[in-house]
Length: 456
Image (cartoon, rainbow, N blue to C red; front, side, top):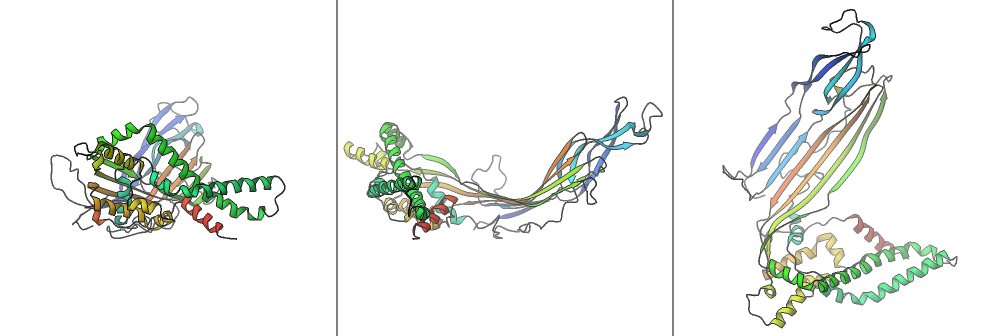
């Protein structure tokens, strides 16, 4: 971030006494209910926020341009975790004060509570290691791994407006692989028949390699081939629609948004169940209502992490063949339009796509995204007014306690959390750099299959 950012901090962790609820009394003999007394508890919200952003000054209308933004929020599990009505939690040996009839003593009166709860006496778990983040350059693996600039080329490639409906150029170049794809599939069906028919000598031992061959054949043979056929059919069947759309959107500004799939994880780090006769029994709740009628308490603690990334921008694309204001022979215009819509124009991006093993390189360094960016910059075919890269992430403990009473079960949830929201603005595409390109589950499976294919 090259901009001069202002810093603001808000601390709402100052403890204070708060009204949580009220008790009530019920006479077991006649069902008479009367109000009890207010119940207070020592309350500490436990939230600290640190924000770095740009001060746009005072304006009568909202400032819509945006800019660099960094917010870290630390939450402790000391706030309200739940609410409910517990009855009974205690018996009285005499009538409560204010009862109109005298002499109603013994176990005829029972006490209940209705209101909110706060978690207390939670186990002393390891503290989240990211609570001390102090600035945008304070990088942490879980919630603030980098400054997002490395995702520029990836975000641009997903936001840029595309006119291509099909991938005819790549399909023609890869048509030479179709016979080998058919041969591999036929061989797999033959091996399956032999293994099921009892004549499987030498087949079972080679099944792992053959299975991985079929997996690669499916992922990079049949799936792309069938997709190309479907896309070309859609283009031909709806050609007038796609042509009209390309002409209408040509040389027009459009806002675009793309979201990556969120990455989440969850692990149980603490789990316990305690009965009322246990010497370690505790309700984990404040107000402390006593445990003489609570038969069981369960506490589970889960550590959860989440990261989601999304991009937003405003783009314009220009293709001369879709601009009817430019004089051009109709046959040439029609031919160039078809090549553009079919994805058959010869350019650096197409050459890269048909290069053997280019897909593997794109997983590691996203070369294809950078070639697309360089091509757009060289031809001025796609321009952008603005583009934002945004990331939201958190690392937290979730505390869930369940309390079993005679007439009800109370479940309370609280969090100890560090969350970070970050936004960076791309001043121009020239500032974009290559993306590290993480591997997804299907990509790891494909690489594993390739490794198996090379064995034996």
